[in-house]
Image (tube, rainbow, N blue to C red; front, side, top):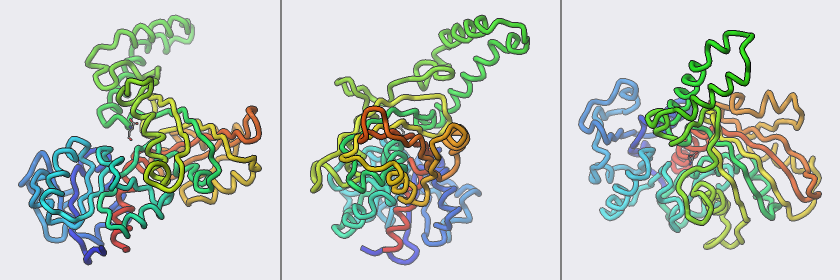
Length: 384
Ligand code: HSE
């Protein structure tokens, strides 16, 4: 169903971290000129639109109640970054009330439902188009790790070259949320403060500094580790999200399940799933998720061809030549953060055999991993 001109688009959760990045991107791309936004709030319904967004609404001046189903039902499209609990509470009521609009959601709640599509249009535009033609109305952003990986190396899957893939991830604090980023930085500060006098003294012993850092890490209070449960600064945590009870984490399960669903493979689709397995690790980066990938290809393909496929797949791939100099400059979270680029590098054949290929990808998990697919889905709806 094509949308009317200037459709009413309800925005929920637009003040949180992902929502704020979404708002920035929508402003930068001129999306607000094409819609009539209706700003919803869970915390201040009835309030006046904050100055930061007042100019974006053409006629509306009020914050609407994010739990008011009748108000939400007026929207042609609802975009929510409010989180999974909100989706669980509101989405079923809205559909039960007969709402036929488009629901675009950053949360994982609806991702794996049969009648929902995981949106990542540079990778799965055909899946999205076919769903639109069938009248599907739920379009859900994917897990950030999966989306960033597929934006980088989706070309190899699209060409049906991948027999299987494994990933070891290096996921940033932002994947947990804003409070997690603050906690990481606070911990770094605490560690630095603990050894500052020793650092300032060039004659101090490094093993004494190390001992004091370890003692400080182990001595961090419950308040200082409230979000990650354990120290992250100067450490890492090789478990992300829930324990599935079978030796895997939920984040690892998502890697395989969501990657295949995005690609239109696996149960319910005409093609078999590609085995994708991971070990997901939290590291002390701010907002870029990095991943070391191992592919077994279905056949031996020359490295130059693989490089060309990856380079040419989409305009956001930033290919980093597999040299020390290029890698340390271009293939780091610091180089990529805040940009829409997905860096792909360390591409090489592995000693395991000619069909085995290694690669490394890095993406900003708040951009391609969260906000960008949502606003692009809105554009797809507008351009139908
Ligand atoms: N689950 C991801 C993480 C966040 O914790 O890094 C977004 O998908």
